[in-house]
Image (cartoon, rainbow, N blue to C red; front, side, top):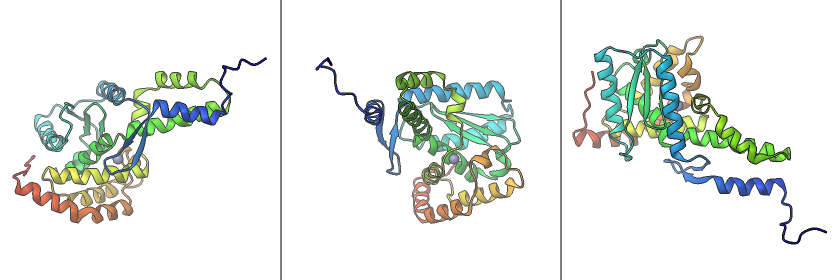
Length: 266
Ligand SMILES: [Zn+2]
């Protein structure tokens, strides 16, 4: 005889929904998009810092003081515009010919020396870094990992196996680099473009140079795109979208210049 205090057995999909609702924080991205975020922000920060330390130990850190001062000047101008003053941003230059750059949760930024040949001036480098910081501000890493996690939970539930075990195992076993350094989706890319062009303009960098940057990227791509290019395709759609944002960005830029924000990074 069944115990009347036992709840009726719920179908897997209801259980999954309850679990996701319990785990997930509902959030809104800086451009107003609804996001499902499963992981606490401080966990992403810890993963970002761990991934960064792994990269620092694997790559060659650039020692040239002028190059470091130049990159730090641009990066600081960008991060000074962020409303979150609790994050202590660190930027490291890596000696590597690939035109690559990244920003990670936890306030870490990396720029390869190869990027300085594609981003030809301070404004273009600001476009790169504004875009990368945009990914972090919009919590794209958390969102992407959350989507993967939910897929895993749903698959495990559908298979009728112990989904809770699957959740905890995935959370524990996920390598920091694997979780954080995958290519972003097209919607994440265009959101990072929107945030980035705004951020660079607020810091007093010329937003029109973002268009030239992506044209340079396209040219640098050639036959076999290096890492950054394969994860950040410089499509004509992307360039057209940026041009569409330019009137607003120029307004922001002119305001910033009028307020005396005139970075001179050399
Ligand atoms: Zn991107």
